[in-house]
Length: 571
Ligand SMILES: Nc1ncnc2c1ncn2[C@@H]1O[C@H](COP(=O)(O)OP(=O)(O)O)[C@@H](O)[C@H]1O
Ligand SMILES: [Mg+2]
Image 1 (cartoon, rainbow, N blue to C red):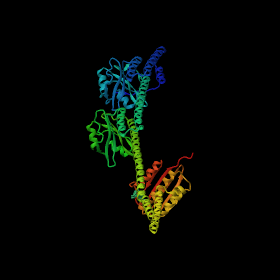
Image 2: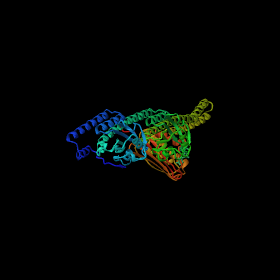
Image 3: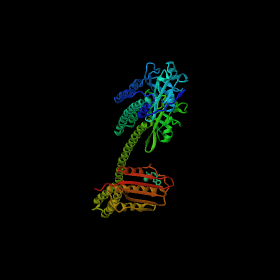
Image 4: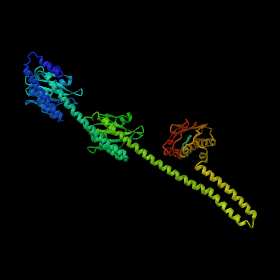
């Protein structure tokens, strides 16, 4: 019924075969044909260079090919991804296929043969072709035979250029070869348009991302960023709905923001179970972008809601915050055709910005909280100081004054009583002085100022009830660093005494590159947490100086504190 032709794909081979034909026309005719073909190709090329629309190019190609090759009917046909073919360019009064006609390639017509083999194909007699619409239309239009040559774009079969005629002799044996020189031009036109579209899409993508990034960098509230992300993602990728989901530790999917063309997206705050098969759960499981091509027949509440809203397929990407999947940005479509393969990458870019916005906001909130704690701790320390001064030294001084006044009154009349009162005043004055010293040492230990960190932490270790191995450098550091290191050691050793039930401990201070590093380890019961004011207090202090504090305290494994304090650069 049909015979597959061979394609000679380069002009040289096409011409060589044409010139070598036994019944070749005279040199003159041959040159005229060649010149005609060249100028037709030039006209098509000019149109392509002017960035004409694909449909204009297809129409001109069909006409030029028909004119050049003396063929009555030419069709340019595009293969669709769903197994159908669409007529995109046509020439010939009797051409039975209008531009825009789409048919299922179920038979063995020219388009189907080329689609199956990727090679040129020929149908000698359409009367013998059963099946598809195209063949039926051809027969009805009185077409006997047809020839098709594949159009390949970027190495992939894009479509077919077909020539048809009422009798087989109108399509000589070299028709395949001569069509081929035009299909290459058509392929160039298509590739050009695709490149242009890609560029436009890239520019659109970049500016959408820039708008979101600008908002993130400006420290906008997360909610504002979430709304913009959903809107920009949706319009960029042509989704019908976009939503940002947050996954809670107990497996709930919380909608944080949404956008849709038909107002069908889930409202912010909607809580649904994180169903196993949804894109949400898939993204959470894999921490990677992914897709669900159909929710048809899928169990669970999420799938049910999506079906109700007409969402057929979805693409999602993880929003990662501090190394964990915080949630997912998900785009859906109500189209039968799932979103194209580039969608994953695009959704992922927006998801990444969303993650940055969330962690920025969390960092800011944490900073505000720790500042508030430092201020509160300072206030509290001053209140305690005032109270201690009032209850202690101040009371002693009041007593001293009282006793001295009484002594002055009795100096003449009752000298022994006066002497007793002076003795009592002296005792009280001494006690007051001792209390003032202690108080001052608590605010800032004088040993630290006078003798440095090594001596100061050494004396802390001596007072600890658990044996502590101390190593510390002899060097002096800026007062704020020495004070911070001292209070870390003091809090850690007090905790070891109070909570650890340890048999021994280690306190190590070292200079590592441009930092002072303090390690305090014990072999006690572990299980320490940032629950009291002590550990949080030193963490705040360390962080306020631009350093960090980490703790490892698994039950039964002892407690290990590791603090890093940056040292100011020596100028
Ligand atoms: N070295 C340690 N070993 C075991 N538990 C500890 C240790 N240090 C602290 N903890 C636990 O962590 C909690 C928080 O410590 P901290 O913030 O210093 O508060 P506080 O000492 O005032 O209770 C303590 O209450 C204690 O239960
Ligand atoms: Mg404590």
